[in-house]
Length: 294
Image 1 (spheres, rainbow, N blue to C red):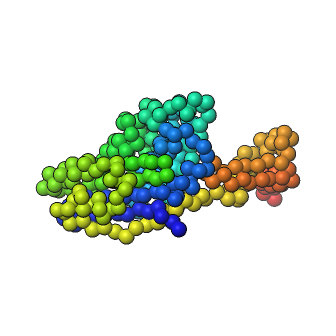
Image 2: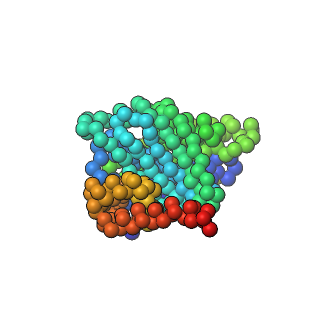
Image 3: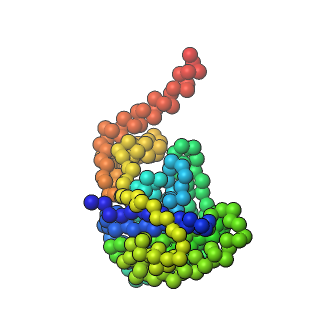
C-alpha cells in the first residue's frame, strides 16, 4: 500500500500557502536501486522531496526536473516529479573515496538546474542557480528568491528510510498591510524541529505552529515511484546514435543491453535488431533523394 504523499494547506486570511511531502515507501524503492554513499544518498533524498514541493506549484500538464551539476564529487544528481506526483531519481558517481564524504561536502560546489517540461505546450523552461547555501533547503530558498521573486521557506528532514519536506510561500501581489503577519508566520515556521517534521503529521504541525490562524488543510495526494522508461524510448535513443555509431556497436559487441539508471530495467537488443535500425536510417536518408528524382 502506498504511504508517500503530498498535502497542501492555505491560510484563509493571509496570502500564504504551504505543502508537506512525506516520502517513505516511494523513497525506499528509489534508494534501493543502487548502493549510494551515505552523504550522496541524503542529498538525493532531500532534492527529491524539494522537487515534489516545487511540483505542487505546477499548473500545467508536465513535470519538474531538478538536477545538480558541475560538482567534482559526482557526475549528476537528478530527480523528476510529474504533476500527478509520479517520481523517480538517480545519481551517477565514479569517485572511489565517496564513502568518506559527508553530506555538507557535496554542497560546496555546483549549480542547481530546475526545468519545467510542459507536455501541453511542448516547451522546456529552465532556471539555473549557483550553490549558495549549506543545505538543499537553503539553496531552494535562494532559488525561489532569484528565479520566482517569491519569499519561500523550505525545511527538509532526512533519515535513511524516510524524507520529509515542508514549504511555505508568500503569494504574489501581497498587500503591504499583510507583511508583518506574513513575517510572523515565517518566524513561527522556523521553530519547527527536524524531529517534529519526521514524526508529526500535518495537522499536528499546523496546530503547534499556527493555532491562532485559520488554516485549511487539503486532502492528501499519493506520491508514487513510477519510471517512464520503455523499450520504445531506448530504441529511439539507439536510433539517434546514427548509422555509423550503431554499425560500430554491432561490429564491436553484436548484441547489447541497456540498463535504465532510474529503475534498473534491462533492455536487450540483438545484432539483428540493431541492423534493422541501421537499415531504417539508411532508407530514411534515401527518401529525400528519391523525392527529388520524382
